[in-house]
Length: 123
Image 1 (cartoon, rainbow, N blue to C red):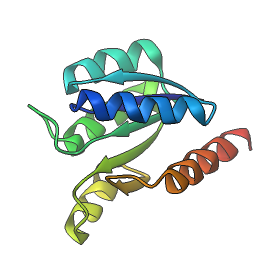
Image 2 (cartoon, rainbow, N blue to C red):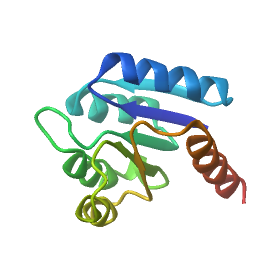
Image 3 (cartoon, one colour):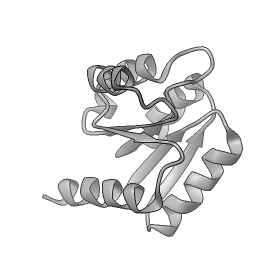
Image 4 (tube, rainbow, N blue to C red):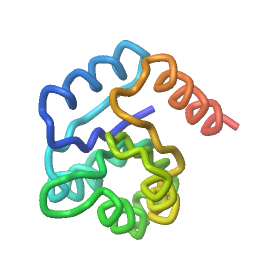
């Protein structure tokens, strides 16, 4: 499974990538929304893990934009954010995120979500 990590905090993005690799999945990192748009088309991820508070464009808007592209028709979008109020979860769902994970993301939660997505892809 290929995972695109969209996170403007480079250290957090890299740490998340190492965890994803440890779980047996492939990953790429995009540090800006613009990079995510370009990288997403080239890498064609199965999962996009995205921060909401990105510079220049919110994760909500980026998710909406990426989901409109045919190359991302089958991708699962996962919000990974420090924003955990009810309104944030509602906005995530409205934008097209299938999951909303709150930072710092618990390793067991991340593993469970990614394994469930991988299992759904095999069906």
